Length: 206
Image (cartoon, rainbow, N blue to C red; front, side):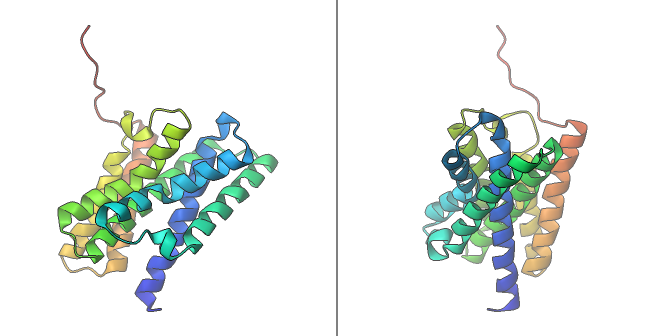
């Protein structure tokens, strides 16, 4: 496997594991059983990429390479086991989710770009890959999806995807462009959490 392809594979595994961990931690207060926690962790990890591949008409990534869904399941189970031993700080939950969001947004844009999609479609696929898994998790857990709340969530995902695509457009190789995209997306999300930044809230006048 070429070095660039191996790098993408490792980053994909890391993204799946991190998002699975964040998915389990985010619903810990729901007191789900082991199966419920496992399902929500896996859905968070592979949901966005699954929808992306279906929309693009591609073979679903974890069906082609089952190691991805195995990594998501193992990460979810390890997280459940770890939570029984130690209390996980809320900061770690937010950081894991932010890291997964930035990484998946870039990987989604890269996947679409690599298959010949234009910049607009690649950006939308990056956004979809980053936020859809968390949306599915929140819906299944009976929560308002984080992407629909005031926090800068989808904005960070789009910024990550656009930074990656802009970097590729000016001639950067795939891996450096991905590093730039993840850095920007993660920075925006963490700054939004630190300073409570968000978009204006919509309210009807009654």
